Length: 354
Image (cartoon, rainbow, N blue to C red; front, side):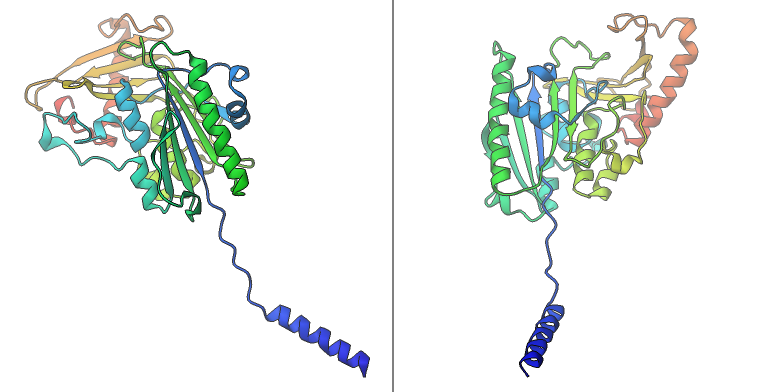
């Protein structure tokens, strides 16, 4: 009798366990750290402070990365919108003089990720500028945008130390909250002395995903236009990423393809506050072609101010060879390629030159 009771008791326990509803676990939030250095480039890895070096140790440094713009003001908006400068519309304090041809301004980083359910915080030199309540409880994850500016006369090591102190606190907090390792994207740019920027390589771009997530190879073409699609790809917002002109630098959407020596495009509408001087440019492995658009007058006016630079013979882009008959075919082919990109990105001034 006692044996039978024990058997039935065990059976009832088994049935109870089998009938219990499954425990639903919420996917772990996908956090992002976007670390941006202004007016400086990064030193070699062994010269980085400890927390920064540890976080980026497994990251991919895209060696040929460049800016998609020709000014530091524009590059800030390129990174935060995922659009080229000629796609900004009436954004900021520099409206285009041709308002009838301007599109609405794009959504920026904070608005985009908040619409996806993310918490968002922005730090300028370690000081919080925008920090929503209960950031760590955001179900989708959180995006921390950290902007470190190297001030005039300041040593680069001091700016790196400020970033390192913030990262050290952030990593410790994430570990305490038992959050998964974030995707870290680091951008360091210095436009000082870049002139027109035709030979612009004043950009360090590093993507450091968590273990098990691959990036494209370091030799792949990359620019600041690819930052926003990379962040959106990480949080599985594929439709939003596909709507942007750049591409993700994570391997998940690139199908494992290394896109080396692909052309890199640059755009500018303003050379400074109130100075409307639009330019469209493209850089290949061998050449840079730049097209200046009319800075005044009717939008229908023809304008053919094209410059061509041979990077192999003139890496500093000091000598325009567009009038050299030996480059006639190159100019025509690259100009057509540049115009196709302008159409694809809905350049509002396309009718001025095409």
